[in-house]
Image (tube, rainbow, N blue to C red; front, side):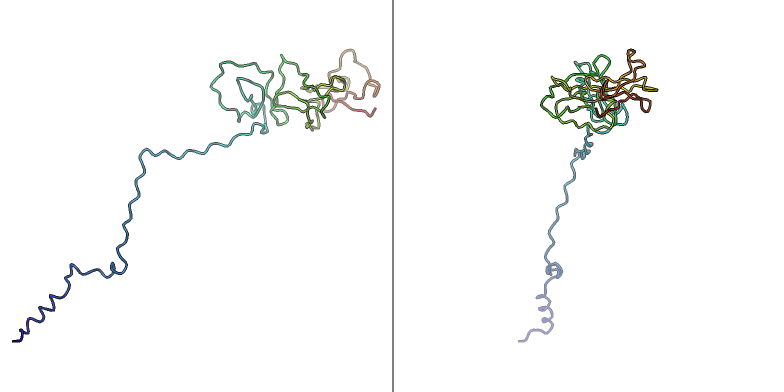
Length: 231
């Protein structure tokens, strides 16, 4: 007995896949994309990025005025440096008296001896060294190479080695001496030749080169200076 013709379409439909189980061609070809984990939220107490520290100030930086200079340690004032390089100090339990003041001389912070301290001081032995080295910041000099090449060493700080034995380094601070003529000026040969105000005992005296000394007094640009002779 042959099956009924109307049963054939029903059997064909029963062999097809249901829409619910039919795979998606697109996902079957490439596979399921991996799940991406979301980024964790930033903690509420995250610290802000620290600000960059300001660049250090060179203590030997050039100065333009006395206000640009200060002692490197207010509690122990020994060296004059750029004021911007001195850290803030909450105060001193004990402090020592400075030997002078910090001034800006020829664009360098320098220690100028005060009224209660000698402007000429004797330092170390310079018998066996090429000269005396100037330390402007501390107002001292020590045996060593003389690197003070200023064109005018008759004003401000300077170091010199005695010409007589025992030879010693001398630190001196020379203040400018105002003059209107050479009659206002004279020369002091010790501890080195430098201009001074003419003493009363030398008033009217004419300097004789090579007899009164190898360095004569002079007045230039309104200030006392010296003039050397080849004796």
